[in-house]
Amino acid sequence: MATSKLLLHVSMTLVMMGYWVITSASVQYPAINCRKHSAVITEYGGVGDGKTSNTNAFRSAIKNLSRYATDGGAQLIVPPGKWLTGPFNLTSYFTLFLHKDALLLASPTEAEWPLLPPLPSYGSGRDAPGARFTSFIFGTNLTDVVITGNNGTIDGQGKTWWDKFHKHKLKSTRPYLIEFLYSNHIQISNLTLINSPSWHVHPTYSSYVFIQGLTIISPIDSPNTDGINPDSCSNTRIQDCYIVSGDDCIAVKSGWDQYGIKFGMPTKQLVIRRITCISLDSAAIALGSEMSGGIEDVRAEDITAINTESAIRIKTSPGRGAYVRDIFVRGMKLDTMKYVFWMTGAYGSHPDQGYDPNALPNVTGINYKDIVAENVTLSGKLEGIEKAPFSDICISNVRIGLAKKAKKVQWDCKNVTGSSSNVSPKPCDLLSGKNAECYFPEDKLDVDNVKMKSCFV
Image (cartoon, rainbow, N blue to C red; front, side, top):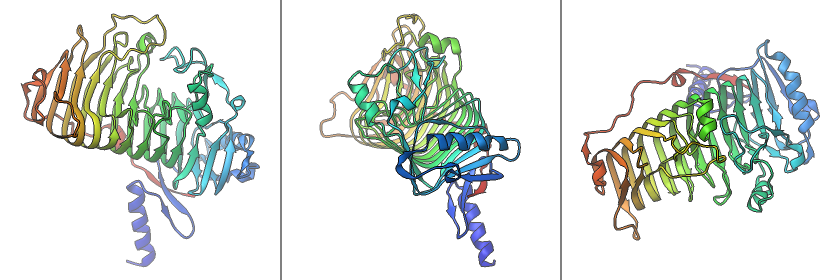
């Protein structure tokens, strides 16, 4: 094989695996779709000195490039530099590409951030009642959008927002770093995201969402800086991400109490694989607590958590209604954990006093297998709801090594039923049902059948 053909073959193979490739002439990267037209932010007056505001440059560029939506789409390239900007909205059939030496800086000036009404499935802001600030990179009712790069960085400069939160000076809910509403075929990949004012990535009411190759880092004491929060989404794939967070690394959600019940849009068909998490005070993967539209068919595998409070945590409460069901987890490596298994039906936290305390969630069909953990304080804390016990919990092939100051009683269970096999330390009697091995589906979800294309900058 000629050298040029060999290089092309290797490059194509790497791109199909989800990696970007640099050749002498271009950067090759994987995307759900490539674009016919390209532009650089400097063509619209962008200045990458870290001081000049580029808000108008980004907004003008995206507006101008939107005209190519019906002619093969367009990509906007952010070259090396420090690009300070306020929030901006994306458009359909569009790619935002960040060079590896590009740093996108979110403006810390609150006046630059427009206000939006609360999400209909939440009914209220999470930090304060009423309005919420728009997200830094935002889109609604979009199709075919890619935010990617060869590991360029987006910095939310969240400290100003965190300080206001801690001092109770916020009148509206803090912005997220990247958010899409009512959209489909969305890709967020091969970037470093740091210091979001609140959640880093928040796809909402959307489908066919592809999140891959993200490095997400915020201080471990920063408030509510979740990594990735799929919210009322279907067919979502999250893989190959490294997350250090002040809150949950991944939090699966679907609305809050009576508002989420009325909106009625579950998160389902969710794949999570090859994730590494560090979160001293929260979970590697949380289900809830806002789950009032339902959560079902979640498949998580090859998860690593280090110095993290818990592995998979289910959080719910009377008033949430709906369900968490058909959850499948296999292949976890855990080191220095407070809990391995943690479920609570008394999380509390309501948007207002209008919730129905008799709207009880149904938590059932929870499967965990093939887990190794070291330096653990408490193996399991499983607390269901008296009038709605958590049922059909299965745990198999689990070995837990205990910390020097581990709890004497390793399992704390109430209002739960299920089965276990080959688990050490021995689980509580409420999980004494026998089951040779817990189930994990082997069929592919539709989102895993989508193949990336090889694109160029």
